[in-house]
Length: 259
Image (cartoon, rainbow, N blue to C red; front, side):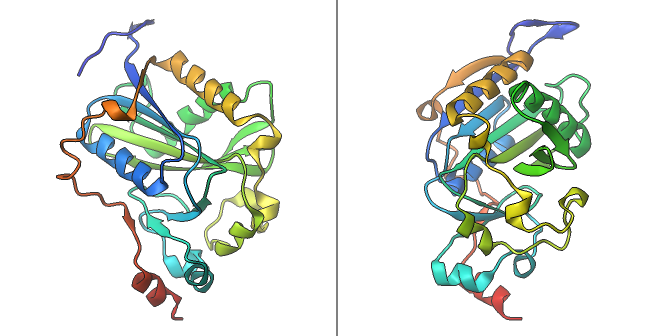
């Protein structure tokens, strides 16, 4: 669908629908993202200001036994979700802010539909969000203040569209980090630091509401923004669409815990 928006040098700025959520479960959010990526022709920005309860989210190809303390997870009944995108493993809760960008491949000028160009573009977008507030850097595939990570990213690229989504650590429970193992493959700038020395809280830099408003404004510099409600989405095809994002069963987790 072609939608006319604001004038851009050399063309028209495409429309981006913005959907603001609060407290949607991360499983439901990932199902919605995957559906919009694969069945919609619109550009989307989804912002979820926190999920309902602690959950671990793994990338598509992550190996459970290498990434998660499975015995602790089973003991404390922490759900584990394998999402439809790549990337690393995170634990999310009400202190996590999720921002997802779903774009047609020609929606962003001069950005080829490959991981590095998309990552570079997103880094420039968020540099506007944090301008004047903190020492923001795109470090490898992470968003960081100085040398401490506060945002983890993942992507999926299809023939005509791509999704880039981020889990922002606005706040976190220190004890929850113990459910995650130190990954064998880590970014170089981590320097073998444990979780607590490697990550930081966004709330030390800005309020949650300010971050969300700044993000929408930055998106509005690139797109013609149109707010939409969850209720307005057509749900007719939901039951027919098969998601690859799934909640792992207790049996799958138990099998991974056997060394």
